Image 1 (cartoon, helix red, strand yellow):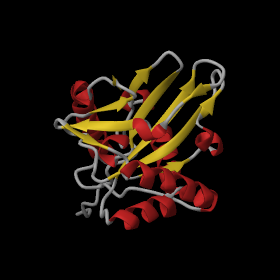
Image 2 (spheres, rainbow, N blue to C red; image 1 turned 180 degrees about the horizontal axis):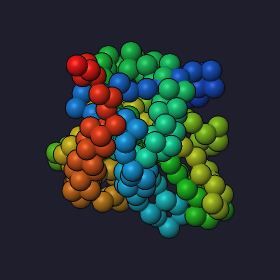
Image 3 (cartoon, rainbow, N blue to C red; image 1 turned 135 degrees about the vertical axis):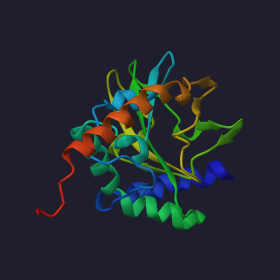
Length: 208
């Protein structure tokens, strides 16, 4: 039943996506924006199969604000460009603060097939399936790729991804690396971002 709801949702959202927008307001405990230096690849979890590569990037401001300004603004623009579609999924399932992830499939051979409905998250020994998929690339629903072709979509989950803890993602029996392995890098960058924000913060002290 859940897979059926997901696939129906894919078709419905694709029809409205070109005119809609999406987003996740996760500013609680988020670093100050505009001071990060990480690359999008620093936030990516990956799986490779014989036919393709799958990459997942959490769309959560607790970590996307650690990105360099251009990378952060690019993801923010993507999220806002699909806000109405994500909100539609959230309303459909009564989700107050959905977890979002940008998932990209890269073709490794001609005619490579992919099935987005088989992607799941592994969180605290539990499996979490997406409630909806909001395509960003028009050919996403064809579920077929040529060599070096890529398609992307925003996956919508019941809850925020635990970006301050640990999780992984699974695709057709394969597991990605652990997000927990990134925590040391993320913690160092949070410290740097806080220091940069303090240096650039305007002095509001009144002159004597």
